[in-house]
Image (cartoon, rainbow, N blue to C red; front, side, top):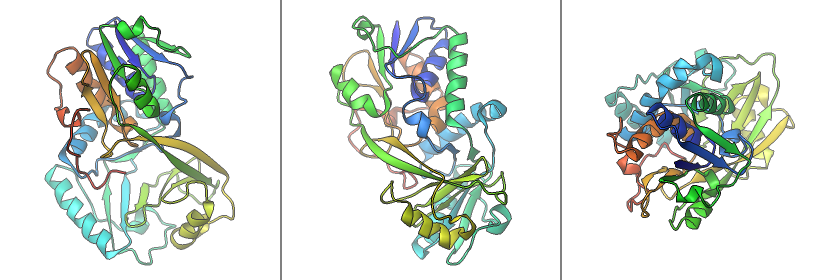
Length: 339
C-alpha cells in the first residue's frame, strides 16, 4: 500500500498520478472533510511568469491539464497583468520579461486599459502580460482530481486519520498542507512548513465589471485582484483582516470598486517554507516522502509535481527533474516572483 497523508490538491494529484501508472493500492487519509485546507481558500491563479527555469517548467507542464478540463474547473486563459508602480518595479519587470522570453514565455507590454478598462493608471510606468496565464476555481480542480483518481482505484478516506497500519505502508507521503510539520514529526522527519494567514476581501457585485479580465497585480505594493462572479477578490500586504488599506489602494487604482465595506472577508493559510518553494521528494527516513509547503502555488503546479513525484516513488524517471525541491536541500532556491 502507498499511503498519502492529506487529501488536498497535492495529495489528490499524486494519488491520481500513481493510479495512472498502475498502482491499485493507493489510499489517501485525511482527518478533515474534503476541501477544508489550503485548497479551499486558494485565489485560483495560474501563471507562467515565474523567475526561475524550474517554476516556468512546472507551469508549462501543468497547463495542459487545466486546458483539457477548462470547462469543468472554470479555467479561463485571461492572463496575468503585472503593473510597474515604481521605478524599481519597472526595472524588475523588464528583467523578468527578458528571462521569461528566454524560457519561451510570450511576454507582452500591452495597452493596460484594453485589458482592464476601469483601472486608474496614475503612476503606472509599465506592464507585463502573458496570455498563457489564467484563472480557475481551486475546489473544482480538487473535485476533478479526486474523481479521476477514484475511477482508477484510489481509496480516499476523508474524515479518517491514518491508522497505525497505514504508517507501516510500503511508502508514506506527507501531503498535509499547513499540518505537514506536525505530521512529519510524528513519522520522525523534520519538514519546515509553517502556516501563513492570508486574507481575501470580496467587493461587489458590480454590473460594470467585465467577466474576462486578467489577474492584476501591482508589482511594487503587492496588492492584486481577480474577478469572480462579478466581484473583485483582493489580496495584499499588511494586516489581513483590516480592509482600510485595501480600500485606500482601490481608491487610487480602481475607484469604482472602492466600496465602504467589503461583501465578505475570507481567511486562509499558505503553507510556507524557508525559501517559499515546496518540499518534494525523499526525506531522511526510508520510504517516507514529502509533498508539501507549496507557498501558494500548490494547485497551479499540482499536475506536474504529482506526475514527477509518482515516477520517483515508483523508481521511474520523472518527466521533470524536480530534485532541486528536495526536502533535504540546505541552500534556498531563488525566485523573486514567489510570495
